[in-house]
Length: 469
Image (cartoon, rainbow, N blue to C red; front, side, top):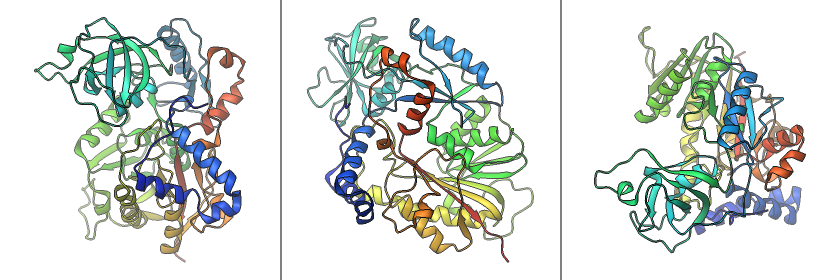
């Protein structure tokens, strides 16, 4: 059941993707009709939020059961007595699952409107309130305390400060304006603070603004899986090559019981600052974050022993996570993907540069996990085929846990190799709404299955570097 239109792309990107999902290998295996059906289903899923909110518990500070109790109380408070279950995942024992109620199609729209940017709109669809920086325009006479309807300008056509907007906009729900129009667009340039408190969102999901900040971390399910696949052990030296904002970095440190060393790198200073803030918030001490370009992280010369940060000598790390910069096409919800084909295809060479450095930095016998949050072949299965051909020292490894589907055909990989990969494909599930009545009839195992399938698009490959003979 689609509530929003399918995701839209620039024409050249749409043509590119169409060829990817209608490639000869795939058509031969599935047949034209099924391949086409899966592709159209994927486009519909991408414009809708996942059916389940996933929260990772900081087990360094609290037990899952204790946090579950606190979350149940918080949700009842936010939802004014509506009982929504909080479910433990049987395979991922440090996460909690919260079903999303929606889409709610019976909401009455109000005359005063607030238009927000696309990114702000996507956050609202996943439970956030509206903050002032996300607001692009409001109706002429909006005052603090007014009931307003909130819309997303998915194509980025609305002019900041406009008093009305007749372009393409998507209804996100209703809320209460915390500020008047003049305050929102004041000459003082106020850029922080709550703009609209959402009271009737189309998708009802708890807000985590300031909720248990040291105990929980909002994270998509596949992003939690990837750290478990890496399987870091206490006392090891781990590298997270492209680490911002630090969700996987802090998860790795937690899985190591905060014992050992986790080096986190990102080339943007503000993002590195965010990693450090998250590590401090979650009270993790084994993380060291550096502002550095991962493509230059390999040292050609001998270093001073006291030097902690990059560049590093070859074979310096027990395990490496390369959660590579990518085209991000697996992120949900996204109703209008704005990148050009040139931008989409620019990621493959960058990923290969980073991967080459990662292989050199990995100790023999060490583990390298490569992941992306995109759906293309060129950034996923084609990278695996290239890596196996380019680096004979690498061997694909089974993944535990293996929750996603197998890799996609089209890159020339053998079936046994595809089975070792994890591709989280949103089209694997049925796009369905959830209301309170259907939620009461759902079994926990059905909701866990839904969480495993109806998530963001994501890809994971695990390699071991063989020891020299």
